[in-house]
Length: 628
Image 1 (cartoon, helix red, strand yellow):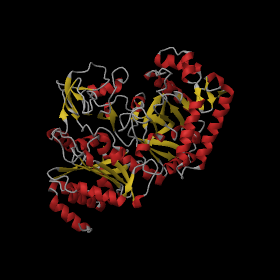
Image 2 (cartoon, one colour):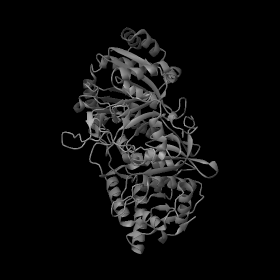
Image 3 (cartoon, one colour):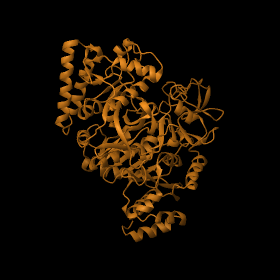
Image 4 (tube, helix red, strand yellow):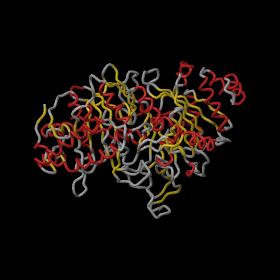
């Protein structure tokens, strides 16, 4: 195609319907016109729909998702269900790559030569939308018109994918019109490819998800699973991490919540947890800003944060009315909810594993007709609902939504929490000595047992720095340096905390209940305001028993035994030293790791060795001194 803008516009005039052309031309942006013309020329759809975000357009996408069979309406008004392929149920690490010029490599990140990757992707996309409608959506990551905001364009041939985008992100067609040539935007192009009789992506062996940092463009093909196809979610995270690095802010895999303290005070926290480590359930304990992603900036010396999203794409397994009453309420009342990979029951309802109801005898799930006792080709039982089954819903459906969820100035962050699935090392909650100590020994040293959200063997301990390793698009050592530098520019840095809800005893039993995290949050809230003393240990500050005893009574109306405290908050020196050895070895192989990282880690090693020499392998908390 000609590079001449007049030629591009004339070509688009011939190809698009008058409505689509007029809508597109209201946006005076040559780069956008060229991108859409290129995508149409490559994918060859039969028609193009320009989604302005109007109620009429949103309703059109909802209706078409059902008409095409990508979604099935359920008994509860507004509820639909979608089924991904049995082989397309999680983030596909082996099919995802960052495209880098000259075949450059990055530690822990699957990369591919940019030219080679683009050639492969263009071949896969060539003519892939024949006989289908191409959908073009305009969105804002972050509140519209905010200093935090990043604009994005999503192209897809899946009504299900755009339906998700319409729930999860702020429609921003008007913002594109307003900014015109000034609009800088991320680009996403997706095709679900050929579908089987269940309307699932068929060519999984040709599933590819390529992130082109240089062009700020993500290509995704032959997949429907949300984590691989919903461009603005984790795929956009790769692009925004790079932009944040270049501009000196943080784009993170974090929730943002307000925790209500004494006297009605609200203190805002972010939290980074790998999948299935308690992230969503913790987010629901406060006033909700966001459950998954956060943009953090230094504003006049303090950290302020916004949620790029306005919806939740959450794991549904285990959500029940006792442990997760707010989410359960949203998922069972009328309203717009997309379920994916759960069981559709005979009466048009849904069932998911761990919802607190008896398991049905039969129904329909992602494998087709399902019955109790059904097995896969290897003889393994197929559960009614996939362990990584999901739901998509607007934040506005939650009655704990914080009034500041869409504040263009963001909310001030008092604390940052990092947690993973750790059976034998970390205590349930502790506070770093300072920003550097927290970044190095908590955030950058995070490990977690693998779960069903990632293809692979569950239960293996994985290195998960900042819970972002799966989404990193830059060199890890440089990323850590940016974190340290970001903190050095703050006059009021947030406190950094580590949490672990999954500590077990020698018999493999959990040492804490699911509800205990409510207490840990209240302790952290008070620590942000320096209202409670703490005990100084080699790894940071831990709670005093007398404070937790009061908080357990106030928050959970429950007694808290001193013996429970001693077991939970014992400092396991050997395990902690083994962890330092693992982390040291990993970062020592990354040439860009800053020297200060190793200095902070070595200081922690020495503290642990001294404590072990004096008190032994597992040290009860009362052996350490108080800190006010």
